[in-house]
Image 1 (tube, rainbow, N blue to C red):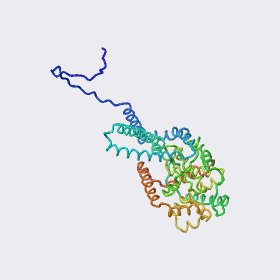
Image 2: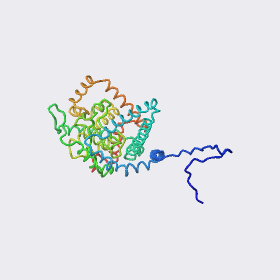
Image 3: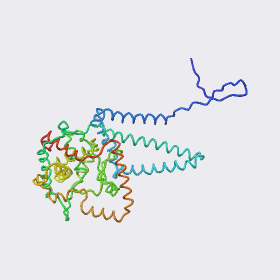
Image 4: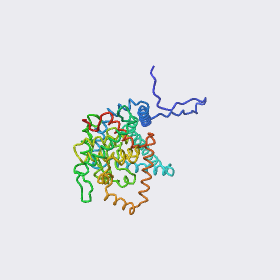
Length: 399
């Protein structure tokens, strides 16, 4: 039986032929509404699956996430500047515009053209927000739900003699490498090659044992707002929205290979700070470049030395090889010249603005970590080193 589509409102008789009551049509969910519903449901499913099933998160981290560098990373690598930094700046502008338009709508709600424009703008903003959440989910939050890196069956207790051997090994390597470094007149270390190429090569060198580390690495980008990174205590950052490794222009050459390898580790799916530090360490010390090796040992020296010092009596600590003054001189993320510049800028250039930026950054970082119930624990770097030492009997991949 054919059913004809109604093209006019239904008229219901009221007993008076001259009067009729119009029944309003039921409002339907349009294409935009369905798009938002399906998009939101997909985000809920992805995040829910990651939270509930480690198997899903682990498979994603090991086999799917690597395509992020090959796709989004390649695209962002076409730009000579940090695309992520530009996107964040643009996001701030768009959010401020949304607030301004919404406030004006209260007063101009009777202006049909303005009302229509504002509603379209806000609908577009919702799509942008959902897209940002999707990128964050695919390039970050699922990774936080994967199984943390561990070795030796997750052993957490080690003989103090083993710990001592590892600590002394790192100190000795630093002492042997530090005199070989190229330096400026003030003694500051100079790295002779391209930072990102050296770091990427170091990461690929250990991809035989860590398959995630194979493949393409986008060029690392210097952050234009490096001063605000300094005020926030950040020397490198991975942007999940653009899949980029970024660094502060103030970082010393002695730290730069480690910083880039650390951010590249995030880009390859090792999202926890302890994991990224350990992977960076392992990649750097297996490099053929002495400067990269030295940076790798420096990046863990403070952690393992401090943990060892807190684990033994003072006389036992003092009986071990001590950290040379030249190594201590190199073991800062800012060299002395840069440090003096930054302190001078603190005093002269709008300290209140910098203080506000620092507080905002701290608030965002705390919220970011709280969302995943995670706090950076750099002693976990020592734990991973000890686990790796226990399982493989050394730190060389080929050993």
